[in-house]
Image 1: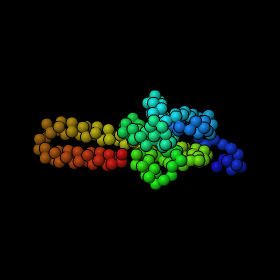
Image 2: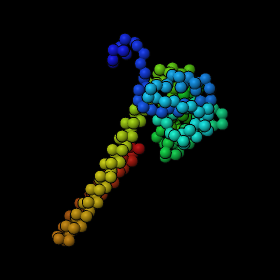
Image 3: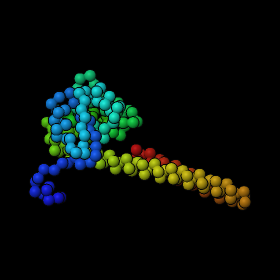
Image 4: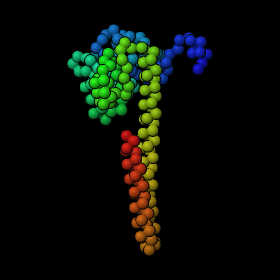
Length: 202
């Protein structure tokens, strides 16, 4: 903790470079979101309902979406459903910010793919921390997925290279055919196992 924080002086929580989209039919809350969440590095856009929110996302996807549930034209549940059905937005971090705190709304929101859930009246300071950690967790997840994909591509390359090498070796030593077949089978089994494990990780 730096000295300013320890002394209780004000500091911005949202220091990361990120774009936020706050979707809510309440114009006062949309204005509050821009006032309380905007920093030198965090930029806030707003939309008045689900349809406008989806249009804004299609034009320029945000790093984190803040989403109300009860809205005219299209509610937050439908927005969540559509986002998760689209591969381009399936992993977008979504923090539900709503006046509802009943079990039905909470369960349905998470079942449809909400990343986090906060209840109004909003504590903007706490919400800033939620945004920060949701965003950083998402970035870590993307980095892990990229590393997994790179490892799988490397494994595919190794399998292909091994097949070519053994094919060339067998032209020189046909008696190795049985051993070569067993080796290739084991290599292909290992590759398939790695793919299955990677797929189970999402």
